[in-house]
Amino acid sequence: MARLREETKAHHDATEQVPYSQAIVAERLGLESYVAHLQALAAIHEVLETRLAEATHPTIVAVWHDGLRKLAAIHQDLAYFAARGSVSLRHSKANFEAAAAVTVSFLDWLEGLACDQPVALLGVLYVFEGSMMGSTVLRKHLAKSLDLDAERGLAYHSLYGREVRLRFMDFRARMDASVQDSTDIREITSAASETFDRVGALLRCLHG
Ligand code: HEM
Image (cartoon, rainbow, N blue to C red; front, side, top):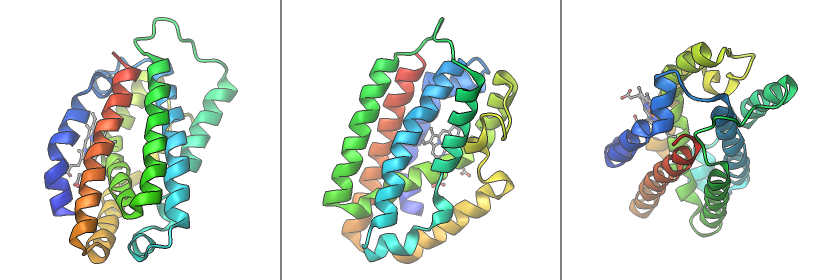
């Protein structure tokens, strides 16, 4: 995990710098961009969680558990926005068609990994697990600027509550104990870097 962190650090920092992330911190992200991000995350987590849960590879079985699932929280947020009524796309600084294409390509890539090198899915999982630490910062800005809370549109970013670090330490321990093979380590690291880049590409479509 130390190597994973080190080798993907530049990719993390680039993702943190995209206009979408910066707009959240500056408290000027449009609601429509936020909802479109949740829609993309729902599609990605649907495939990622399904493929990890059904995997039989011993390394994945040793790391994966149901407590890592995030899809229900994302669906809860989307249900809240659906019940609240349509989100206006006016004044949007987003290219939603491009975001949909990037998401479809992300899903194709995940399905390919699940077939050809399933252990690499742990690199994808690492990025989304770690992103929950960013969520502790982002959710405060989103709550303030978009008038949301954990029950109203912020369930995903609030999912681990005060246990974010604890959860990540547990994930780190499981990964360190289970991932030993040098080919697996290479594949996981490469998939994590690519995940950051794909997330960055998605976020660039969601706020220009
Ligand atoms: C403005 C946006 C972001 C902020 C402010 C932020 C902030 C943080 C913080 C504070 C940490 C903990 C660092 C530490 O304890 O050393 C972290 C870790 C991490 N973040 Fe972000 N983050 C952002 C965006 C993202 C995004 C978009 C992703 C991926 C989808 C991401 C993935 C990760 C990962 C994987 C880690 C774990 C690094 C490790 O291995 O320790 N972050 N982030």
